Image (tube, rainbow, N blue to C red):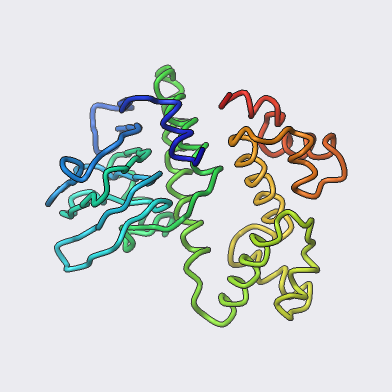
Length: 284
């Protein structure tokens, strides 16, 4: 099963949760949900939202258009940003569209956009199928339904964290300068060799840069050390394999280059808070 099928299996039908932290919707609205659409009735034409909406496209294709003449192709793995009071259209062009979405009040969004937490100039981000981001959105949706009043501010922070992560992943994927091209090469190398237990030294050697210079450049740009990035991507790969349900925990530890399943399970729990077996039971 692909990720869209896994998520659909959890929901079966369209679903949404709506909560408010205050009587002022511009500040305190929180919304999350899952929806499937088709090309006949799934489009929003000349839509002007009052709040900020973030939509992660699990499957399907479409087109984003705004009043400034921009036209951007949309595909699975994109994160659409519907900005407050900005008229636009999202046109669904296939019948297999599915999405996870969340919303926050426009004043909250505006204040964070001013300090570049978000990317207000980019209506379509390309974070890709990052499993941690998808899992974060699923967890947010489940918690929003069950949260009591005093827990809602924490969920506002969680919503902001999700949008920030999508923005961060998009910035990683949109590298242009010479140094950024080197970093892009390093990211690609890591992704292609994630099962080979590569080290930071291996990556630095691949991009023909000294270890310390590469480590500092990577950390400065991405706000995470290359070693921790490699670890996070390896755990992300483990989550994908666990959710697919085809391999045992031991087989996955071998697939990802761990010396044994104990070392893999210990590292997995340290980063996710769950053992691999507990995580797998979430889906099966």
